[in-house]
Image (cartoon, rainbow over all chains, first blue to last red; front, side):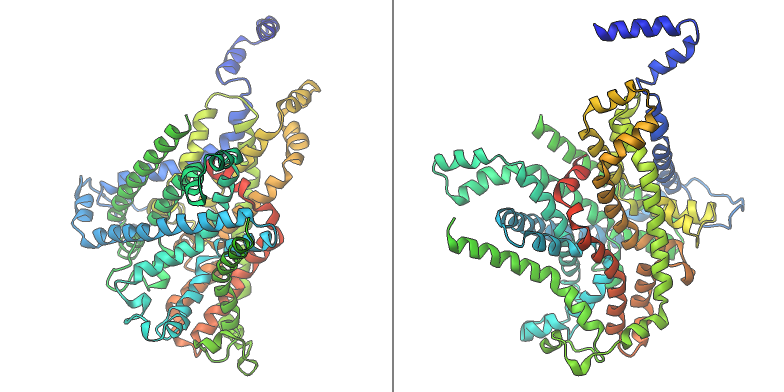
Length: 316
Length: 277
């Protein structure tokens, strides 16, 4: 009622002065200024995300190569040639397989360890801050810096092998084609775990205490409570872990580049992004690299969409 | 709760802390060793084997001060862009009602899903080749200028402010900029710090993009020059591991120190809001 009156009085005031602006004002919503304030961000997204995606797709259908700035060169349309080159390249399949290994180790380990540590952290009173901070220190440190220590720890006569003694793998971790990728997965899990602990810690706050009490009344033990109350309660966080692990896997570059000297041994730890760098920048085939990028983006978006549907169905 | 259970819980947490902190301790110990000592005894500092030479050695190969300054400029530019443009975007996405707000919010969430690394080829062609911004700070900063997670954090905090507050200010005749500056911003100061911390680690730790865009050593952030040292020149030094770890300590130091000092601004609820939107 009041809203109608306000609109009417507003109409009465403005009709004579500037009807077009009033109409535009209503079309743009109650506060057209919002669009202006969001404009720099929208422009940024257009320039840094939207346009590059379109450009990448366009490039992937072209025989594209680097040329001097301003030079006019002929870049013919080649259809799906770049995509065919990608599909026929065994190194590409290997890199996708490697991301599979990565996720197979990273996801279960992350979910189990971060949930376990978050639950323990949730219940303690003393030294809480110390534990919380010490868990996320690796997360806030540059990969490049921690890679230096891991190289030392996992070198052939490094501390890890010294402790293992006769059990040390031969050849050593990062130069062993079976262990290189698992070691990278272990590194990334270790580095990111603190973030996921914080995530689960937040999720645990949202699990109602009364659910645990109800479970106790019904005679549920600790194990039963964990699987029937805690696990379903933190499910949104778990789904998020899956999504973020997918993104991390798709993004993997620094670790294979530095830890295994560029995806070695023999491509056993190459990641798709490392391959994009090698094909696009090092070998000067940005068209083929773009095709690989487009395939990966589609892949990630499909998984993200599935997750979104998954969580959406859960909450509504 | 039984006593054993309590003890077990602390044992578990302490074991976790050891696993997370040991590599950092080992980094410092290793950076001070004259001769790299990978044996178990080498994990404990030996007074006879301590030296600062590794820091001198790495500084000869990689200009640490210059690298730190470049990292600082890179991170500073990103923080400035995020604060200026991110706050107003977060304000527009929470307090103001305008056409296209819903779709913009979906866009912010979508941007978080698209891995930035996958855009490196088109971005490299655009920024380095077309705009000629390779070996410039601007070219380094541009793709990171506004941190989308920070936008979501700002939005989340602005949403928590009561609507009446804004209505009252509007009735008093304050314009939207005035409301943002004098009413909303002072109330979300903790969010500013959280967002600054979170934004800081992005560029400070970023390797791939500055690595692509800077070929000139004088412009490289420390993460890039240290990585180049690790992958190319380390083998030619007398104590490569010591020098590598000395560089690592210098690179990790500022970020770790900031997060320890401001730890109370980096808590789960903020992260949750940032990630869940």
